[in-house]
Amino acid sequence: MSLSRLSLIRETIFSSKSQLVKHIATKANTKMSAVMTGYGNAKLITGNGIPTEATVIDFRSDTVTKPNNEMRTAMMNADVGDDVYGEDPTVNELQKLGAQLMGKEAALFVPSGTMSNLIALLTHCKLRGSEAIVGDESHILHYEQTGAAQFGGINLRSVKTFADGTLDLEEVKKKIRNSKDAHQSHSVLLCVENTHNRCGGRIVPQKWIVKAGQLARENNMKFHLDGARIFNAAVALDVSVSELVEPFDSVSVCLSKGLGAPVGSLLIGTKHFIEEAHRCRKALGGGMRQAGILAAAGILSLTKGPTRLAQDHIFTKQLAVTAQEVGKGVVEVDLDTVETNMVMLKVEPISGATPNSIVKRFAESTEKEVHAIGQDIRLLAYPMTETNIRIVVHCSNTPEDIKLAQDKLGYVFDEIKQSKAV
Image (tube, rainbow, N blue to C red; front, top):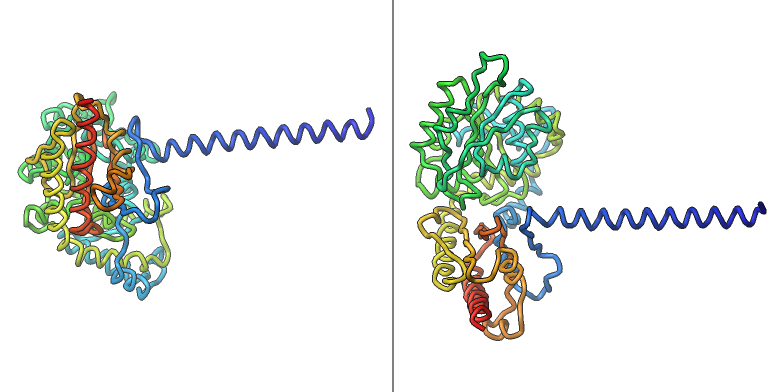
């Protein structure tokens, strides 16, 4: 075979391989895009692609907040050190403040709420194959990739979650293992979430929490709180946050939700627990070096963030009332369940709409609509389930945002009703 013939074959093979690699990469990117924007059948609308001249009101989550000028200045001027060595003074100050506010001995600054919950599970449940009992609607079960199983060999045993965020304690009792039986695993941890995300920001009653804690102690189990939004509960009830978390052995608190920090959570408990948790954080890659830049924002979120939450709750109630009034026949809103900064819009099947279709329409605009409202309003919301749309109010929302959002809800719901009537 001639050299020119071999060269042609080689070029054809290389070209085919290049096209194949490009095809695989394209397919992978397409798949990743779907994974990143979809939760089951619910499609999360992003702000990407929305015209810059449009007014975007983002109610997808309270995680979308951005640091204000005061927080940015504090971050810029933060005194820093190497936190892996325990030498960052601002991180140490944040951890001390968090522990004091919670009435606990110590705290640990971590990058995210998911890591905070995971560290708590790994620290409490050291024996592989042990079990943590969680609610079947809990964030730990639904949105954290069952990391406890991936990284710690921990089984998450779920029990029924009631509409107010409480768990069926009778079912909890039945699911606590008999550790003396060699056939069974060890029930080590009971986890509670307050406020409860998938229940629409409900405040879990403190009397129930006390009973759940007693049940855990009676069975030699530890008691963990996923308190990502525990400050919302404290502000709504007008009680100290330390009172709400007193029954728990460990508490996870998110700084980057309603409190307004850009990054971070605190895991809080006894000094010994936090020493063990510190080792887990290192193993998970959560040890940050000059993290005082982030901790400075966390300090402001704890000292000034809670005072704003009451306003968020008022705004949420206003939106809920509007949605109930203008959305009749399209969505149903139970005002009695609107307790903090979330409202659930339950889509009526008779409307012909779905959470996905409504959320998509919220993020769009028409010339007729702009003329009627006076502005190009794009409202971002979260299709939580196949029946519910979640709206979350946060510190970046203004009174003007709420007024425009009310106008948008009225227009879109009226449009849906008119299309159904045709």
